[in-house]
Image 1 (cartoon, rainbow, N blue to C red):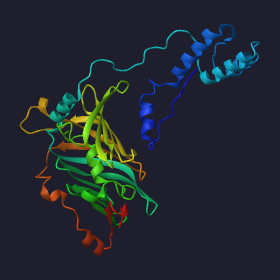
Image 2 (cartoon, rainbow, N blue to C red; image 1 turned 90 degrees about the horizontal axis):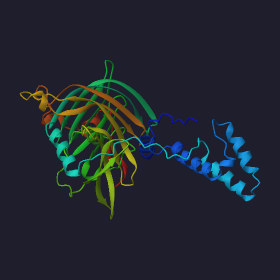
Image 3 (cartoon, one colour; image 1 turned 120 degrees about the vertical axis):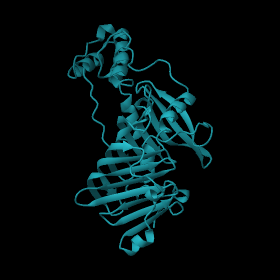
Image 4 (tube, rainbow, N blue to C red; image 1 turned 180 degrees about the horizontal axis):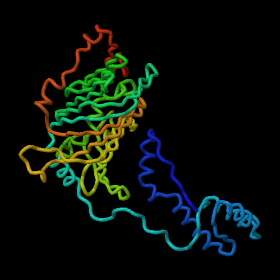
Length: 366
């Protein structure tokens, strides 16, 4: 009997995605197979080998007509619990996955930092496509074009998106403030990290600080007990180290971020960011890894990073996928201090742009 798993939708909940990631391990087919094996061993005289869905009715009829009275009903219920399986008393096959030795957290962090420390800044071209959702205006904008991505490890990022016909957006962070400028619809959001928190995540089409987090090239603080404190799990089926960053909030511990690192390369494969209630505010899939050239350094010592990113923002429904090319530490002196300068909100407002200031105390934009 065959079992199928539907392709996951883009907005699949994180827990569902994790379930699908380990589908082979937790397959209902294998659980049912064990149950049916027990049924066959318990009542072999009444057992009929299940070849397809059509035989289900025959088995139920035979079990229900059992001369053993209540036992037939019990077997019928047991069958319903095990429906969908072929029998056999043999144990199910060993699950596929990696069950060998793994590294402790401190060694995983050291190796990740050894790579990421060699990417203090970044300049790259990017080609992107996606959908921006403005929930306040109930408007969706489809985008497809190119731009540049610039990054500095001091919590700074600058990303542009345009094509031959129009400018789509500009987003950035100067380490203290973040902004997103929807140039097509003349709307500008900005906030200060000290009082924005997760507020406005449902209003801003894309939070720049979240994009910065999913690049997967930030160093991990080796002081493993300082908040946000990293904790390590290992996913046997996914063959990946899973690091969760936790912090105290309102008298309890909350998970802020989770990154899946490939066991063999220790390169990031998935990034998930959470709010204080455990809801995913952005998840990203990373791939197509390439080296970043460092002038004057042998290729064997160049760092590696992902160049393919697929992002989904559940709060808004916005999605962005982009591919990086011509990746280097800098280009013609950029990035520099001027790269991350926030546009003047007052000047934009005077020019006819709708300005929204994101603040934690109000929990919404103004």
